Structure formats: structure tokens, C-alpha cells
Image (cartoon, rainbow, N blue to C red; front, side, top):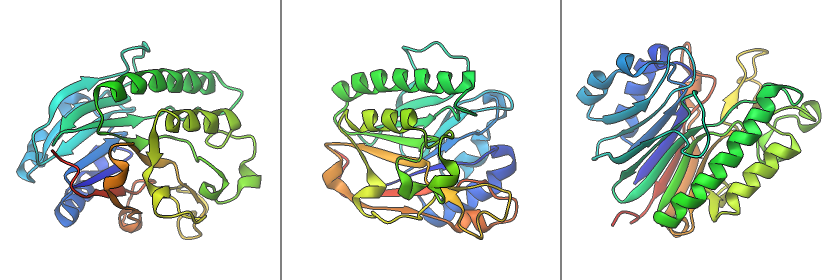
Length: 258
């Protein structure tokens, strides 16, 4: 079973990239973030023609999350139930017996901003909800743009970023608290090297110079950890014309479905 996450930074712009990627890779699950579309604008028909069912939790211009799968998408849930929020950042569903959660974590803007405090409060809400979800779903995976580089290996220049969002101690502590629930960073099960990134700024030729961050993650529950076969960052879409600034992260599971 192949599961992937991709912040597409506008599905209106990136739909051809997504359709091509689906055709080439044929994932069982693709979680999208920053679709930046209302539900009425979401391309259900084009995805269905490509062989994919889809559920979407969207809004105009900002945020927006979706789950795509060729399999049945069941027990769909929208938003954090324990955190009042108008921003569309969460969608969850059960696919092939696995609870799939797609999350777009708050960016935070700057550590001295209200958005940073919103981020930490939102992450606290996420942690509490995931604890409840794990008590109900043994096989659970949380895919998305976390807007957190977990440690210095995940940042191209830790000294230059010191004290900024994405790498601040409080954000990293929040990420560790998610892992403490019994979740595992699937990429780090297979790769402990520095310099492997999933996001690069559009400026300063950052992609060509590999000045990036690993902020897109796939966390798996204890029950799924033994089934993990590989987790890779697919840089191919980042090389396309007018790409998203993020690229897909892909997890392959063996014999994980019931």
C-alpha cells in the first residue's frame, strides 16, 4: 500500500501536475494540502476520470485539505473537534482498514506573532485529538505539511534559522509530543542523513542549491511501524515548470490492510 502527502500550493494551478503524478505513481492514498479551493471548485470529476475518489475540506484562497484514493473512502471527518477554527486544516477517513488523517499545520509566521501562538494552541488541539483517534484506530497514519523541521538535520542552515518559525524549540517540542503518543516519523525509519528536504523557497534558487527544509511528514502508529517498507521524498515534481514549493513524500506499507 502506497500513501503520499503533497502540499500543492493551489490545486487550481497544480492539477495537471497532480494528475500526471497519480498516473505515474498510482498511490493508494494521496493527501493534499493548500488546495486553496472551495468545495464547489474542487475537481472531483477530473480525479474520478483518473480513477480516484476524493473528499475535500476547503475554503476560498487559503488552506484546504483533501484525501484521494482509488479505494472506498469511509467514515470521513472534518476539522479538529476540540479546537474552534474557521481555517480548513484537517480531513480524516478510513481507507482499506487504515485511519488516514491529512493535516495542514499552521505556519506560524514569526515567533513574536499571534499566528505563532495560534500554531502552538492548534498543535495542542491536534495532539489531544490524535490521542483519542489512536484509542479507536490501531492502524493510523497522519500525513501532511507540519510546518516543523524536527531537528537540525531537517534544515539547510540551522544557524541562519535560529530563533525562527519551523525550527523553534516550542514547535519541535510539540512535534516530539506527537511522537510520544506512539507515532513514528516514517522517513527517519529508513534515512538518518541530513540535507533531505521536502520544501524549498521559490527565491534565491533555493531548490537548485538545496536550501530547503523537511517539513512534510508521514507519522505512523505502533501497529503500522512493522509494515513500513520505505519512505522517500520524490523531488521530480519540484523540477517542473511552475511547481509547488513542496514535493511529495511517499510511504510504502507491506501487508497493512486487513
